Image (cartoon, rainbow, N blue to C red):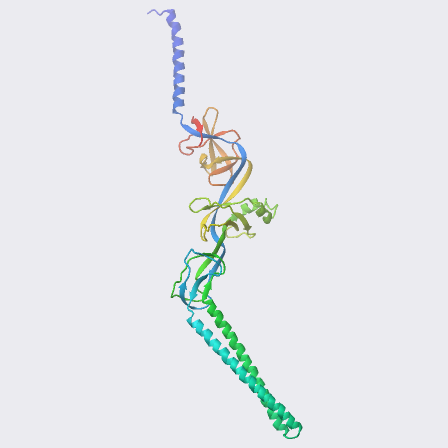
Length: 388
């Protein structure tokens, strides 16, 4: 077989062309198969995250309402959750026996006063007789023993008067007590607030040991939560400033309610206990939230959101990380859009959605923001898109 020279020259060129088309095809196919994933660029910025502390709310002043006398409830004048003013009547206890006690005490006072009047008249009479007998004694008309008898009678009358006055004092004290007990039958609000749970109704026998309700002054609400030892050291710059100075410099805090919504009134941390509970390793802190519309109630739960401020910090979403053997990783995207897994170090504080990156990333680097831990694999080529 004879092969022409021109045909031999065409074969290498044809092979090169086929190889070029093959490479382009593979590249196009690879680009077409690259998944489209959201990518973010990490930069340094002054950032504020929030740490949520579980809390239970209570009124600024919760007052236990207990009766000061024993008796049957004749009327409950309020309902649970009702807002009342200072001095408003809450409960009425049976007044029949208490009023009878007042009437009896008043009768004793009247009798004691009458006894005093009689005793005073006896004193006056005895004194007149004694004075007359003194004049007769001076004229030797009567004997000394006869005069002494009138003196003894006077002294006895004076003693009886003193005893009667003592009795009226005791009777007055009993009357005062009876009237006070009668006044206690009307249980009034010691201050304005909201009525709590009412366990007793009309006809119930109550006593000073009975808790009728709790009156919550909820114009302001206290949120109680715990701070651990590291939190306290961070607040005081490792003890470089006092706790009072730290509290004064704290920014406002917010409250996330049990339904996940954020309360629209900012609060302020007002106190942090100086004693750490050895059992829990934490100290009790309190924040005060205004409650102008009475939306918050004692017993509500939620999260006190404490802001954490860092300057020149890099922040990444927690959803852009995955964890392996207690280490956190991200997928870094290079210039060829190939992803590579990389370990990062993050700060302890976080808001449950983002991390402060301490080490492992540089400003300007790109990381994958979706599909992490699910569909993203090492050395995968992706088609970057802007994260929402």
